[in-house]
Image (cartoon, rainbow, N blue to C red; front, side, top):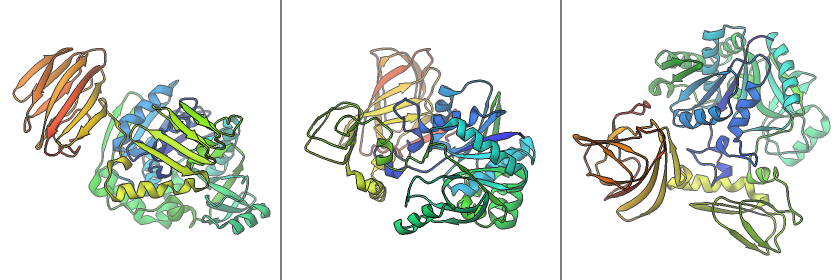
Length: 472
């Protein structure tokens, strides 16, 4: 097999899995019962394929550090990792074009791009590997190859692929129920998995033919972008200004539906896109009442429900066919048959500019994390955890002051013109308008309580002057 580069597309919000999935903690980071996230499973799925030496991930730059930690926890062997970091989403055509140009520069036109979604589940790795082997053969012959899932029934939530053997005849949008039944009965249609295998030279040539504006804009963007290389590691940070003019279009519309050289590999690999709470709940083992429970719950006369609770006891009485998902700052109660409609709640929160669509109470940063403990008019309390060697940016706030109390560890603090060490049970006060920085110089986690006070406490009241993580 020629050089095979699994390429993970990690974008989207997973709005149908709110309140666990949020903009800055999207669906790929949701952990399943085995404690692995969907993103980790995607990485391992590609990394263990025969001959794979590198995995490329295209994701938002705000998710880079979280993605890197996810991979570090499951990475084995000498597989290299490369990251293409988008300032914002421009759909899958841009992501595939960026990855193809990146791989071309390193491995040449004959390398094979295996495009994988970060948030799908595949239960049968052996069957997946066999499907990839056949797809690689076709891709080496100049075909753009998609993976078609043998339908388990007339599903209206997926797009379909019609084929004659391995030759793709057409891509079809999500059908109504009656049409979906006809598709399944015909035996010519497969669910569109959104996974692809393509020779790099072929995909770039086809993009030049069918969507030259996408390819030209991506090339211009990469020419303006920053690349950092390390041992077994490459990071490409896309330039925001030039990336903003890249057409916002899917690879299906830009390429797959236009090309005459598209093949499909039909496969039965235990695939699911985990597109709703009903689908996610169906992965667990139900008890004698048909309930799947994750966390602590007390039920009486409850049947066919999915209940998930992170921190609190959930009590349920006399209900049937419900989804109940409890997080520290939001509770979801939905009829199982309406689980797809959770996306409307997410959209409403976003329209109201309510941060519950975007953030959890615990927010991860490259230096560690913070958890909002309590907030009210003119005050907010947080618990900060800074990793050894981690440091916040040198920053300033216009509208709030901060009081830091060290709970454990040692803090190195820049406060205006002063620099000091603050130990356990000690504190320091930072007035509004003062430049300040917090750093953990030790070898154990630094934990502190931050008390903010002021007329405005939003996360956007921050002016960064210097940052080791490139966020200035």
